[in-house]
Image (cartoon, rainbow, N blue to C red):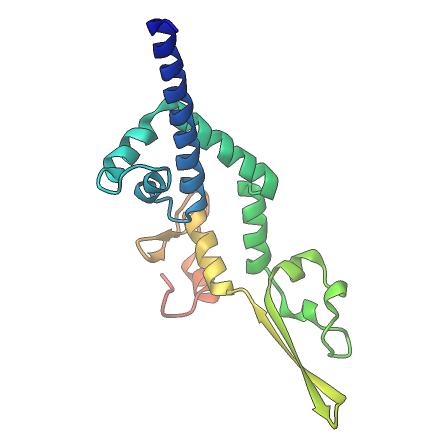
Length: 191
């Protein structure tokens, strides 16, 4: 084999190893909720001693940027994670009405009978059966909803209605009079 052929073959192997390492880096990065690039570099095979600088360099590589963007787009499409879908879920929690859980006679509805918005607002449902001599004589049902206050706060942040921990009454086109704010907010956070 000629020297040039060996060099070309070696470069091809190096390129395929680099691409494989980039793909491992991207997979590790996107699977980490904190998006820790140093940990992703270590997972991709970089030395723990140099992982931080390797991560910094790797994030600047155009191919890596492209791989990240493509994978994020795939994940958003696969899980329907658009800004619109997330805001829709958040709005469902913000606007949740506990009365939708009950039948007119005051009994808890079956899960299958809940509309989608109500079902999405449920964090959990526990059913404990009360038994006497191995016979079920009743049930205790515990329904837990997602935290509405947290959802409201997240929505307010998204729409710019919170500023430095306080209520921003002039964010975007939203203007709330002090009288309306007093009706909407508890006294300890009213403007």
